[in-house]
Length: 135
Image 1 (cartoon, rainbow, N blue to C red):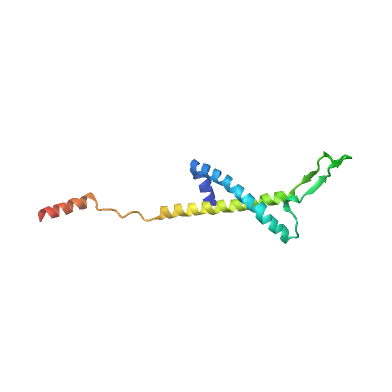
Image 2 (image 1 turned 90 degrees about the horizontal axis):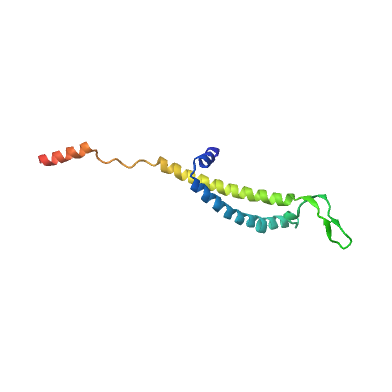
């Protein structure tokens, strides 16, 4: 599989690569929506009803004034968002891998296809014409 990926990445056509980037960008938005809007809420509900994008490790808490306004925002590591992005990446990478593998399989089949049957040679045709003229 690694060899197939290297063949695609280093021997591919630049136009193919550009089309792949454009389609990949659009596909990435769809996958992000599926993960953020469908998968993660269901997974959060199954695991206890929490939102993955809210999962964080607060390094310094927010500082509020007397009116409750934020003076200094909190500093946090949002590992829930990171988890969602990792799932996005894995889904996109797997789909692209399947696409590349399919293309490589089709190219290989095309290369391995038996050559078209060779027609008669010039000598064969001339011999046949000579024999016909003799008759």
